Image (cartoon, rainbow, N blue to C red; front, side):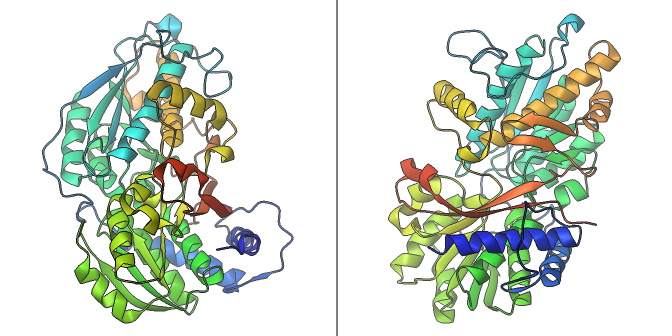
Length: 475
C-alpha cells in the first residue's frame, strides 16, 4: 500500500462529500467535485443508507464476542491516592491535560463518590479493557484532586466482553447509589445489554470505544461516546478497499456481535453500491479453528477480505488464512487496533489494514504528556482506548462537579444526568471534545492504518494512510 498520497486526497474528497449533504465536515479542501469510486452524492447516500443498515444489523440479543461463563463479577474498587509516590498529581507538572478552568468542589466536602468502569478485564479481550481502565484511573487520579474531590473512586467491573455479564454488573452498579457515572463499555453489544438498566437508574454512561449507532440513537440522554460510529467507519473502510486496494471481489465476515455485524453490513452495502462483487457475507463465533470459514473463501478467491470483529478472533484467522496460501488483503475496523493482533498472528499480520476511531499518539495535542504519565504509572505504552477512557472519565468528573455545585452538595444521579447535557465541549487528551445533542462526538476522526511489523512492540510504528474527520450522519 504505497499510494498513500492519492488515498489521502480521496479521503479528503469523502469528507467533503459527506459535508455537502450534512453528514460530515472536512478539513480544507480544493478537490474537484467527483471522487474515484463515485460522486459526492453516491458517497453521501452510502452513509445515509449505512445508518439504517448498521442499526438493523445489531440487536442486544446478538451473540457475545467471547464465550465465557455468564456470571457477574465482583466489584473491585481502586481508590484515588493522588500525591503518593508513583502517582501523577493533578495540577502539577505531569498532568496529562493542560490546566484549564475546571470546577472546584473542595468546599462541598464531597466524599464517597464513585465512577463505575465496565470492560473486559479477563479473557481474550482483556488488553482492550485493561488499557481503558488504566486511562480512566489516570484521569480520576490527576483531575479528581484538582477539582477538589475527596477520595473519588473507580469501581471496576469485569464484563468479560459478554452481554449477560455486563447486564448483571449493570444491576449491581445501579444498586450502588454512590456510583454517579459509568465509563464503558468496550463492546457495543455489551453496552446495549447494560444501557436499559443505566437509563432506568438515571446513570450516565460515557463510552471510550462503542461505535454501533444504536448506542446513542436509542439511549440519547444516557449514552455518550468519545469515538466515531460504524456507519461512517464502514464507509471509510469500503472506500479504502475500492480506491486504494482496487478491490473487485470481496468476502465479508463478522463475529455475530452488534459491533462486528453492524460494521460488516455497512462495509458490504457500500461495496455493492460501488459496484464491487461481494462473493460472501457470513458470521461466525469461531475463535480458534477456521476451516469451515476458510474453505468457501478459498473457493471464492477474493482480493480483499473484510472481518468485522476483534483482534482476539481476527489474529488466529489471519494466521490460518496465510497457512492456506490465501493472499487476499485483510481489512478490518477498530477492533483490530491492538498489539495483541500481532502477538496472535505474528508476521502473517503484516500488510493488514484497519480503520480505527483512534489515532496514533502523535495525533493528539496532549498525548505526549499523557503517554509519559501512562508509561510511568502502568509500565506499558498507552494505546487504544486509554486516551478515550481518560476523556470519558473527565467528562464524568465535570458533570458530577457541575451538578454538585448546583446542588451545593452531593448531587443525585438525576442532577448529574442533567449536568452532563451541558458538558458539550471540553479539552481532553484526544483534543477538543464536543458532543452533539444525541451524545455522539462531533466531529469524529477516522484513521486508516497498515500493520508494518509482526512484533507487538512495534505496533506504534503502523503507518497512517489517511484520515477523515466527519460529523455523525444526519437523521
